[in-house]
Length: 62
Image (cartoon, rainbow, N blue to C red; front, side, top):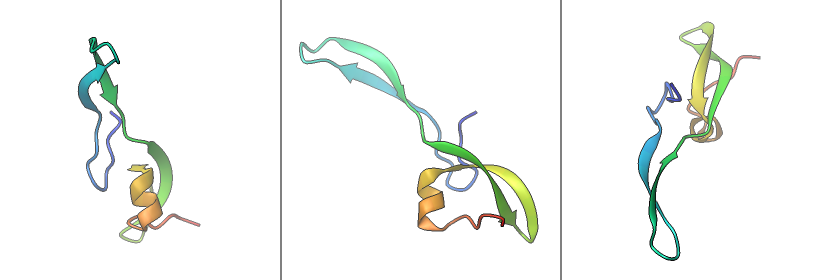
């Protein structure tokens, strides 16, 4: 599943509304990346959204 392991973001569902107000179902998916990160002193592969990567909530492994 496309879910961030840090902040918990996951795909949201809603309606796309056209100019003529025709409604169709769609999803908004978070931008998830699989990165090697330092978690409690151990290097693990985790799924993280790019917002958490940019804000520094995740320390990438070297």
